Image (cartoon, rainbow, N blue to C red; front, side, top):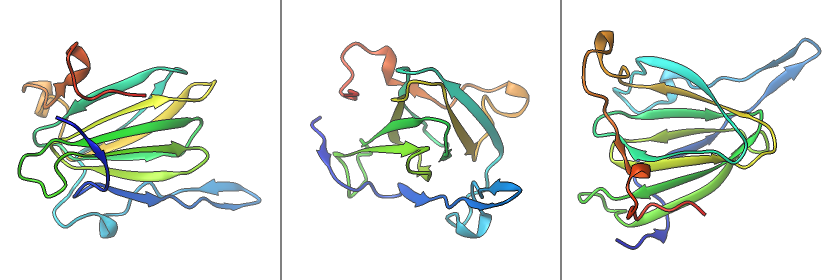
Length: 158
């Protein structure tokens, strides 16, 4: 499949404004009243990614990811729409987010996604997913298709 640059149905980027004063700062990662109806995050985590390291590309069958890229560090995010029933099938988004452009990113099920730390220092990513990793008690199969394990994957990072 060949991908073209374009929007992807269901993917949302939203700026994350920093509210600062003499005490420090506050940043809302997400608000339930700004999420699509019925989307209820079930868990949250923060990960640290070393400089130059990529995570993905992978996709989820049922999980929606609600990422917050706020720093430290910047990431190049890659998204591909390979959903056969999507009006934006074949579209690809590449965008730099993080400390230089704080963004909330909503990734619906079936959208292949990856990110690479493009900074010289470790970077942090927050995620509030709508499904528990490996289900309740970690007793179910992981909802993940890992394209980075395939040598002939069409999902290439620059």
